[in-house]
Each structure stands twice: as structure tokens, then as C-alpha cells.
Image 1 (tube, rainbow, N blue to C red):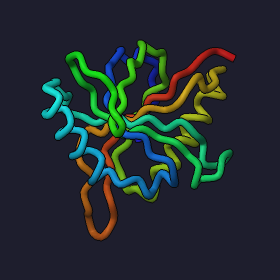
Image 2: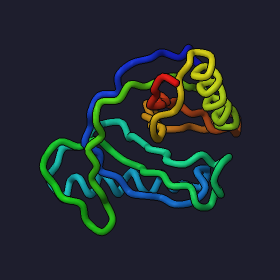
Image 3: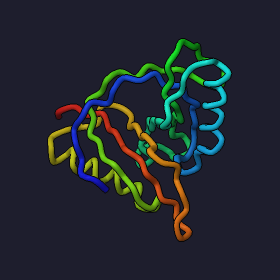
Image 4: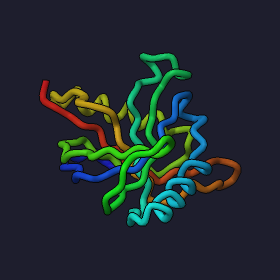
Length: 156
């Protein structure tokens, strides 16, 4: 895990599919290709990295009821439909941390960010965003993730 930095999360138009359920059961391998196919159908230009938005804390809410958006940034004019929704995400001040490592250690990253925020006098100011820089891959039987975590913050 890298050190944590404060920075701006740039505004983005997000095309997403909402998932309700445990975060470790999100079918990324189904949602992400569907989003790129949708973008092609709608003739909008997709970005290269998917952006996922996690609305709920599974330690505070029943994990089976946790909501997340699996999304891709897009450019162009398009409306939501029954499956794919559109959301304009404004510029946000965030605590940012890069994570590269085994999936089994991933939840520790959020603890590290939360501890750092407490020490620095910040609190959460909205859902977390994760930008996947590389496709997860299996190494020696363990899933290796390369993700940047962005947590919107405000002073306490």
C-alpha cells in the first residue's frame, strides 16, 4: 500500500450498473463488458479504466443490502435506460491511496485510510470510489488487485 495523499477527484460522467449485495460477489466480469458494449451501442466514448462506487459500509449495513455502482467514464450525450444509469460526479476533495496486492489484504486498505483520516482530523463525506488500473490477475492461487481508492473527505 502506498502513502495516503489529499487531492482532487476530477469531475466525470459515469455510466454504471447498480449492484445490491455483498461486495465480494459483484460480477465484474459480466458488468464491465456489458458497459463497454452499451457505450458502443449508444455511440459514446468510454474511458479506459472502470470506476466503481461503494455506497455502504458492510460493517455497518447488512452486506447483502450493500449498494455499489460498477461504471465506466463516458464522453457524449446519452440518457439512462433500464439497465445502465448515468451520473455526473462533481469534483471532490479526497483522500487517495493506491493498493496493489492480494485481495485478502484489500479490506485492510480501508482501515488504513480511516485511521489516517482520524489522525488528520477528517471524516468521510460520501461513498468511496475505486479506479481499477489493471485487470485483477491470479498469482500463485491468489487474486492480485491494482486499484486506487478515493474517499471523499471533509474536516471534522
